[in-house]
Amino acid sequence: MNSFARLFLAFVASCVAPIFSSAAPAAKKVLFFTKSSGFEHSTIKRLNGNPSFAEQVLTELGAKHGFAFTFSKDGCLFTTEYLAQFDAFFFYTSGDLTLAMNDGKAGEGNPPMTPAGKAAFLKAIYEGKGFVGTHGASDTFHPPGNNGRGPARNRDDGANIDDYTRMIGASFIKHDAQQKARQIVVGAKFPGMAAVPADFGPLEEWYSLKNFAPDLHVLGAGHEFHGGPFLRPSALSLDLGPRLLHQRSAIARMC
Image 1 (cartoon, rainbow, N blue to C red):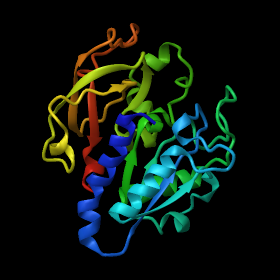
Image 2 (spheres, helix red, strand yellow; image 1 turned 90 degrees about the vertical axis):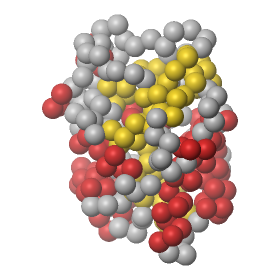
Image 3 (tube, one colour; image 1 turned 60 degrees about the horizontal axis):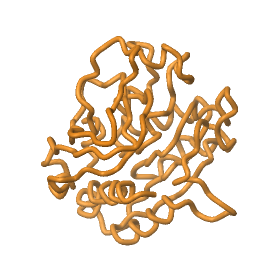
Image 4 (spheres, rainbow, N blue to C red; image 1 turned 60 degrees about the vertical axis):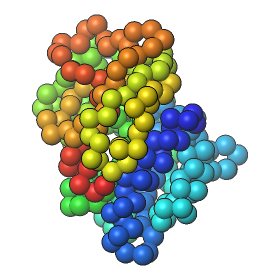
């Protein structure tokens, strides 16, 4: 995990800690779910039965900020009863999580969610539980025909988007080569954002997104990309606007 990824995880903790810590002295329970039905990122890969790097970082942050993390890649655990124990969910996922592996046989093969389990998860969020999605969380539950890199992947999907995409607020198209990009803070009042330095410009893998929700709470905008142009797909049929780091307002109420 690079320094930006570590900083992001620290930001997540600073984002939710003020609300959670003032509510009660007991640690708040967070499910960190990392099933990959598509590409599995090295940050969340478990090697030789050892916790992933992300799990190690969150264990450290949890002890420091009052979170009790549960780490899982098992989608079959998703039931109304199981999810009820958690205060929030943290996804670092990919692909259709109701499949063990995507059609191209990508993925780690861990048990998938059932459709009922997925519905229970979304219902829990809409009823007030917290949600954080990082990196591949936007590369999760694509509409039909969007799993590959064909023309459909480059077009907005309109009413055909998945309920998960409606919840998270956008979906992944592609990324280009890693490059530095200065971030302009536009939501400084959001918890943790005021501490972002003016020259914050990490070397990262910046995503092109589509299917933006109309009620996004924008936190920062990408500016001054270095190391080559940040290219959107040439077949894109609509103007997606500026490159944004965002948090959906429906989710931001938990932070």
